[in-house]
Amino acid sequence: MTIFAQLEALLFYYGEPIEIAKLASLLNIAEEEAATQLDAWEKTLAENPERGLMLLRREKKVQLVTKPELKHIGETIVKDEFREQLTPAALETLSLVAYLGPMPRASIDYIRGVNSSFTLRSLVMRGLVERGDEKGTMFHYRVTEQFLTHMGLHSIAGLPEYERYRAILRDFEAQMQPSTETPPIPPLPPENSQNTQESGPIVPEPDVS
Image (cartoon, rainbow, N blue to C red; front, side, top):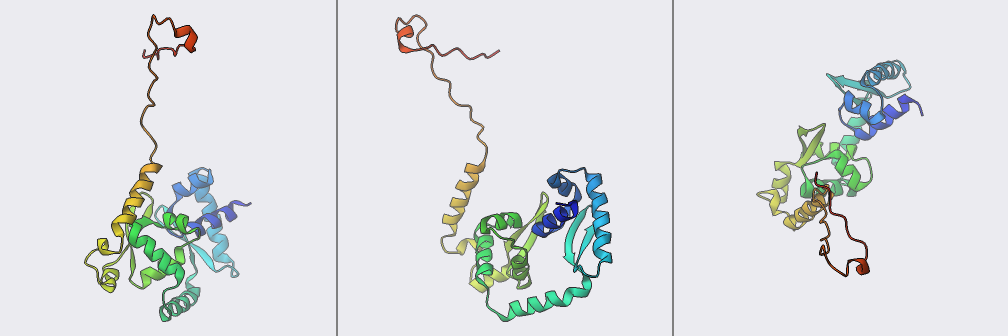
């Protein structure tokens, strides 16, 4: 698999601007090499009329996007989306953002098992979801005031069984945290116990030096 193929797959899956340093880390290559490969691939995409994609670079970030001359295709898709009711995929994604958000797209993809880039973009266009501040290297999505108004809610906590699902989320996050507790040391048997040899080997005293 060529480095270009790996770059394409990673940027397509990520769906948002990604730092070149993080891209290099994910591909297990040096940042300088990643930048060099991006330069070459950017030129290849730009010069090939058979490709509908291009690289969009801002500062130290890069994103895979469609070429400007093909924007009418995206506009047609968006218009069709607005003519129709929310799809099951959109409802599923909206529910996740409402109950578990703010959350990054990677978490939504992980839970749904598919790339949610287009679905999130559609929800953003409808004014139901918005992209919040960047945390770490990823943006977090949350529902909008328009969503709350549409649902007749004063706050997100007014959703049915909201606290129940938030509690499930907190339990899940707690389970994912690495344990920092030291396992208890079994007690030592009495030093002069006559039953020591009969009951099995003595547990050695831990070295605390």
